[in-house]
Amino acid sequence: MLGTFSAPEQRFHVERIGGRFRVISPEGKLVGPPFESRRAAVEAAQAMQAEADRHAKRGPRPCMCCGRNFDSEGIHNRLCAHCRSRGDAASLSIPTNSIAKIRRAAS
Ligand SMILES: [Zn+2]
Image (cartoon, rainbow, N blue to C red):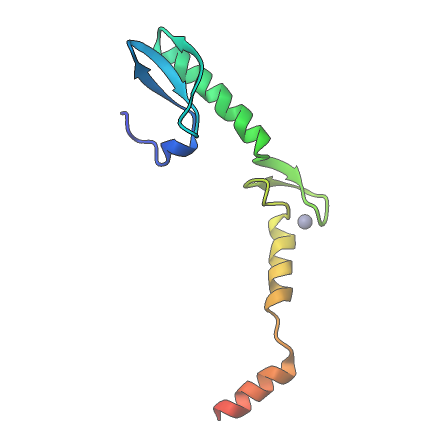
């Protein structure tokens, strides 16, 4: 049951310290008050995680390009999938004359 967190160092989690339950921040610091029950500590940890996620701007946000709401992966993720794929296509496009040169060199 326990130990299934894939990356506990990046999440708020709960540890039993000195007979009480403490919330540990992603940075490994003790946060919040000590709790008598694991359940209360886990609820506090989840609330802190939700707050951290809001600060990290994970979740729906408007695309910087087209303004459409999309499910962002984080502060670095500001373009919707559509605009991002369009941007990638533009940066990867090679002028046709250089492709012709490559083809000539290969044959
Ligand atoms: Zn967009």
